[in-house]
Amino acid sequence: MRSTRFPVWPCALLVSVALSACLQLACSSDEGGGGSVALDAGDGGTTEAATPDAGVSDGALQDTGGDVTADSVADQGLSDSASDSVAPDAPAAVPAVHFVGRHESTAPGQARFGWSGTGLLVRFQGTAVRVRMDNPQGAYTVVVDDAVQPPLQTTPGFQTYTLAGGLAPGEHVVQLLRRVEGHAGVTSVDKVEIDGQLLAPPPVKRRMEILGDSITCGYGNEGADQSCHFSYDTENHFLTYGAVAARAVGAELSTIAWSGKGVIFNYGDDKDQPLPTLYERTLPTESGLWNFQWQADVVLVNLGTNDFSTDGDPTEGEFVPAYVALLEKLRSKYPNALLLCTVAPLLWGDDKTTSDAYVQKAVDQRVAAGDKHVKRIDISVDAIGLGCDWHPSAATHAAMGARLVTVLHDELGW
Image (cartoon, rainbow, N blue to C red; front, side, top):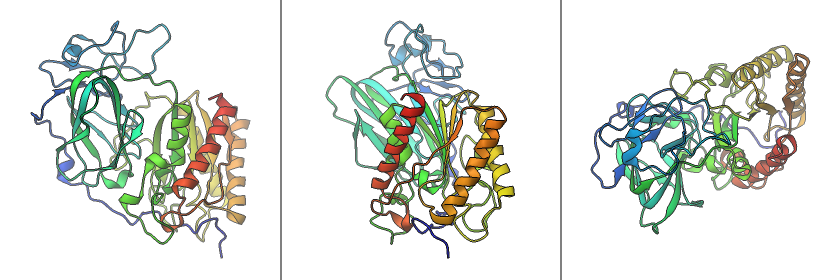
């Protein structure tokens, strides 16, 4: 009989959501009032403002000597950029909608994203902002000037949703972030409308990426207790340990996680597409690859719970080389990032001891190979209440996030 801090559930692997034809992007116009604005893409595609002839190329945040209206974006030449950070001697960024996390932009005025916590941020002078988008199983966190709003639920097909309305005239920042994970379907955005003037997004100064499973997704963290089962309305990435820590240290977060996934074994005896095989995808349910222009300062790997969750654990000879290979891949993508490794918080006893030992051996191998910026950490905490299927509650996530903040302060001075 296994000892676990919480009993481990199959992590929603049985949840299968078909992506319908409505996920195909459309760029039809919407006359719902307010000016449409440029979309900022960071993936190598091109985007443009809905203003006539407002051609905007990909992703760079360049100096314009001041704020630029949406109508004048057509006059700004934007070039590709490997980073959204603004150098100390660089001019201010041009007005744009900033997309958070991995996303693709395949046509003017369109963007798609699907990983947990992905979304968009808009900074503007005005009174309202709307977004036209499609997601068949959409559930989103909306944040207006740092105040979290009631969850936004979407319906299939392109619809226009008000993210904030009736605001006092002045400067505002509004965020729209996915609560749910990739198997809920792809979010497709084809227009953002503002009653007012679009401003440049705040500069991104710190970047953090987390690889994980159901824990990192926020599976069941808003559930009443351990007796509830998976549902999208109880999963909230905004309240996960990673999101809590990222906000505390002022870092932009990219989450690459899928419930039930492991390093080589998924939950049970499933070996189909463990997380490392999905890691390079731009969208979790599609095969297109991310270009890694967005460079993380720190990457946390929180994988291994599902590998050791049931009988038939991987041997050291299976797990350690696979984990080393994952660390090597991460180093190839992020040459300068600090790599942190943990298995938290669901395992304890023999499973915890074994998984920690295997991860440490993988870390030791990388250090011996010359990689000095990789380290095993532990952010496990005792349960503070329980979420669905014995997963961590929001309170437990908050405690884990606090531990991670301490690590980031100690290691990076954040």
